[in-house]
Length: 318
Figure 1 (cartoon, helix red, strand yellow):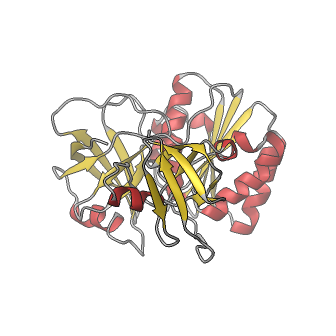
Figure 2 (cartoon, helix red, strand yellow; figure 1 turned 120 degrees about the horizontal axis):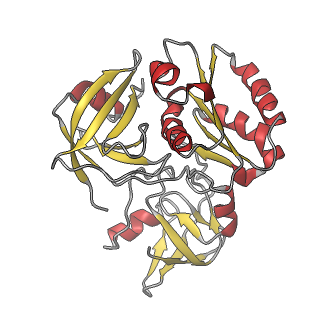
């Protein structure tokens, strides 16, 4: 995957721990429109790669990302907050889209918490542009801790579609989700991003009403995986090459060690970069990037974390 050199055109403090960065191509040309809900990889000053959702209108020609300074940062958000200023050059990937907007929906409900608002803004811009029925629900601890409040209250053009939920205790959030789901029908699609527990509440409220496949979830942190019972298995590629995958190694690691080019980024099952086709065998899905229907089809898998339910897989190199 070819990265693109960009320069930082603007840095803004949204909250005490969230900064936004406007990225423009270093060669002066404009970026092509990105899909609504897409994210990019950013290679930071310390060479650490992290994924960030685009939060601007898809056709602006530049990219806008919001970065929350994580207290346990391993060099990603901390490096961007402390080491990046206007004029800094970085590398970014092409946009990838795991939070695709359904084209057959009658209505869209966007539900975000905290920094999870970022992909919802680009989706909202796109839905507003096409005059599509939607509502955006934004949960945050307080007005001052919420990013993009001025944009969403005054400048985005779709303020009438935004509902703020500030200071709602966690044990009361589920009640609000249930009330929202009560008015949903089979033509509604729901999109959510935020902490795992929050997204679980959204899923649990809406999935029984509109179906699993109509609840779209974007993860920005990996869930813990129990690897204590992992065993070795065999992977054959459609090229005829066969590799043994040890119990303590991933498919991606083994393939790359043997000179097979597999694009990777997060190596945590979030970004979807390393997804490969499955021609034979049944994957044991451990990722947070494929949808429920994609996992049920068993014709693709995230090779950085997922394994097999059997002894062998036949994979297709995309």
